[in-house]
Length: 58
Image (cartoon, rainbow, N blue to C red; front, side):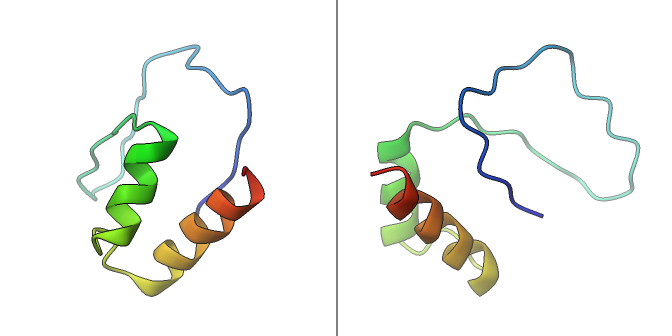
């Protein structure tokens, strides 16, 4: 799932106990736009959600 959270900030450490390996990346808006343009989002629904979020926050 992807969510657009404005004004969010970390309040605690992440304690994920699922079996999927995850990596938390903190990127600027520009870095996200660049990653999208370079095809770094390999799954189409992720790319579409990120593109819509970028449009929504212009």
